[in-house]
Length: 308
Image: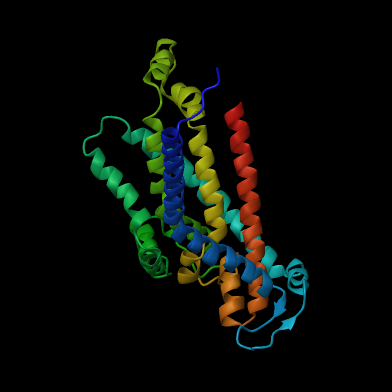
């Protein structure tokens, strides 16, 4: 027997349907400010920048010349662009690897019973929250030929290691890498500390029962289980190296002799200092594409690792 809804049941169903629609509308209204910012600032900014990259424009002239893809063709022939990419590659390889090793080492050390462990953790993490301008200003003084780094080396009998750290083209890039390692090792440490706390103690106990020593346990049990953290730090570190600007600009300004020129500092100089806004916009679009490509590659690796 087929039962039909009563008028009261139909009215109740219509009211419930209207309530759901109102709830959905309310949710969208809460999201609207964020959507406006994302679409109006980020995506519109990217599209506008892409349009500017097809212009020969100084940023002031009201009638810029449309030159199509000429700026992108110029990038391919620009030796400074390729040099800046090589600097980013060297910088990223050094900083990401050293930060991961130091962060993991500190996390393993501080996971044990150490008196004052909380204080030590805070001291390691403090550089992460310091303003880059403050860190850059301090290290610009420390790394001068007559700065504190050379004074300390001389005081401990290592005067032969003294360098013109940020004035020597052969050393300046590595000095900047050291500053970045100082600033961001605490971030790696915190992530590894959190990941270590999630490892099942039963795995560690099983390794000890099998006769594994401390190093064997770390190598064969701990490190493999930190795979997602390794990949997260690798992804954020590589993208961070590509976007590095503050410490480079404030400490060396891309010098000496463009030996520390990064893509970000080169974009700034082209767009702001030399008024080549169209070319600077093309460089920024290339940097965006590189960041997206690196993100795609590393997220693909992350997915493959999760599937294994």
